[in-house]
Image (cartoon, rainbow, N blue to C red):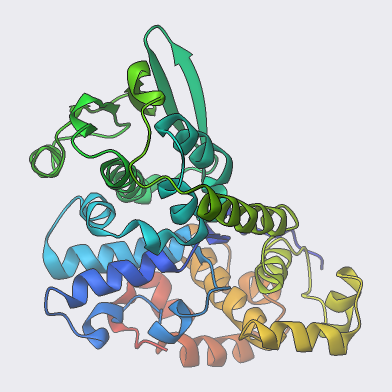
Length: 349
């Protein structure tokens, strides 16, 4: 029988893979091997080097948890943002550092932050003697909140430091999470005024800073970078890379998953064109379908009370035994064992 898709927003791709690569490099710099870093995450380095493979909150959460297990360090996002070169943010980074003034830089960030992470939006608000940069969650960040907001804050401070040294102490920051475990870490890495347990994430910038010229201003570089950002934003507004659009279409699917031919029709192209375009992005329809099934299978087992036979049907398996065999190949244990236990017995793909 037809069934509604139960895939939540946290399973949908939304953050550029560069940030997961940077987190892995940060861990490698602390002496951890690639095998140690990816153990239990169901991720592989080869997946993160694909520029078209945006990660979901669920995937990022697994990587953050693993990093915490390995290091015992809280506040990794802030450390990552503070230590990352502005150029690592691609065209957005170049558009920022080449801005004429800090006010121009804020406008660039407000307009284009979505090309790197789609789970937040930035809004500039004028207040008496200051501008408030509010960071709003468009998706519930849940257990990734401190990491993502910390990374955004660290990145912003790094950018301000790059274009206008020695001015960060004039900023004030309100953060929407408890400082109990991270306050000392944040205060050690930041010179600005901090407050925790705020209703939302906001950075206050004195109005007197807005018209100060950026030391790294470059009009020609800025025009080129903005043009690149506009191109990426237009692609994002169309749904992002084709492989991402197909993944989201599969996650939103009700009932049986469509065949390659039906999916090609949905995107107004031939099956051959869909195959070719996905291949150019380092993917295939079967690979995307398998990845969606894997993520949904685990989610439905761990987050719902649906019987296993209904989960199998939800994922397009009419025979529960076929689903169980496939599940064992994916995770190294049966669906029932996974539901009763945890990931400790699973072997990585």
